[in-house]
Image 1 (cartoon, rainbow, N blue to C red):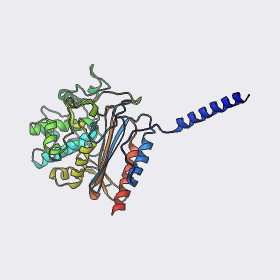
Image 2 (tube, rainbow, N blue to C red):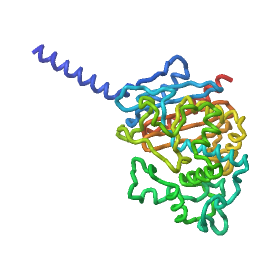
Image 3 (cartoon, one colour):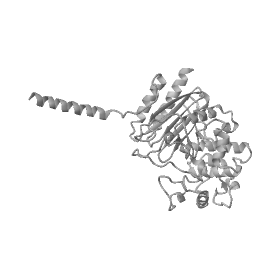
Length: 374
């Protein structure tokens, strides 16, 4: 009888322990030293982020008064046990558009392009469809998402070779212009915000034609080389697979990196948290005339507006925020710059887990830390 009762107690203890374990968050590898209040605040937010079952890997960089703090969590590929670091390469997707905005600003300063110009001045062939009641699309409309060019042209997914896992891998400039010819304006450009990948893809081709150089050469010359962003790239063929944060789908299964061959300006770059700290500092300093010009508002208000491919916001305390996020088939990213505070943050992930709450929490943490150091 006593043996039977002991067995029952043992089974109950096992079940209770199993239930307790099931309620706990999964263990996530991290290099967070947990040695400061900032470390602890970041870790609490990250632990909440990893409650999303889709989460795989995460790299964060916070810049506080010009000083960087790096935090890395999870895995570069599900199940491989390898934690990312400051030099792990992630897809940054549409964050690339902010780089395109800086190249456009440089082209304006070099007098190769005028923001007020009708875009048809820079296009080969005739496009009578690219105006509405006599009002044409201007260059600046491409960079602040008011052009009325549709987000994605239907001929992207209508192709026989369309691959939902790598949707733009063979999308050509010829197809881009074909879609542009087929487009119909529905209202005046320059009046209504409507996000458009195709508008920025077109802007990229205009910039390439203006300089007679490919997109990556323009980015390298104007941004990557001056600010020592040596790991930011398009081509990763020469990179060890161990240095890449492989993207994942909602089931945490690895999926393809995206290839944007002939439409790079809309989201082709891959980068690291270390490189993007340099990018934050360069944008905060605004010593480069092209960077400063790219931050000038062209639509909306100072509370909610658009510069040249930069989103403009105002914090509750009135601080200016310049930001751009990114998303590909299996990666998500966020970048926020606070020039008046000489601070900022970057979030890089290799999954579809929702990082919006994490971004908001890190912004609040950063604002608190900066205030505390004043």
